[in-house]
Image (cartoon, rainbow, N blue to C red; front, side):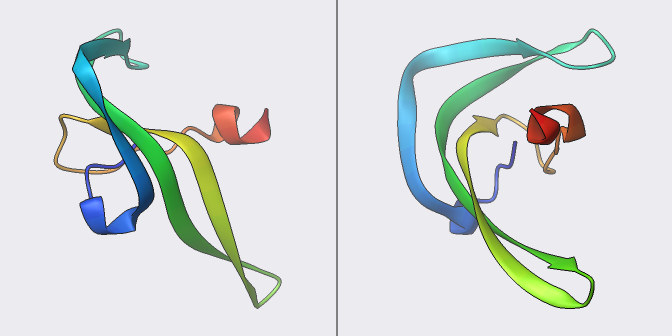
Length: 71
């Protein structure tokens, strides 16, 4: 999840906010979904990755679920 609009390649707003439960059992609103571009470095080599179905939360910082990435 990231609220940083410059990271999105595509974005679709939700017609109404949806609630998502976090690991600490608290909930936050999600206002949209899109595809985000990120760059990773593996063995010294940069890889550009597009993460689809990335949620747009009502947060000030980004969250990354390693469990979701592994799936």
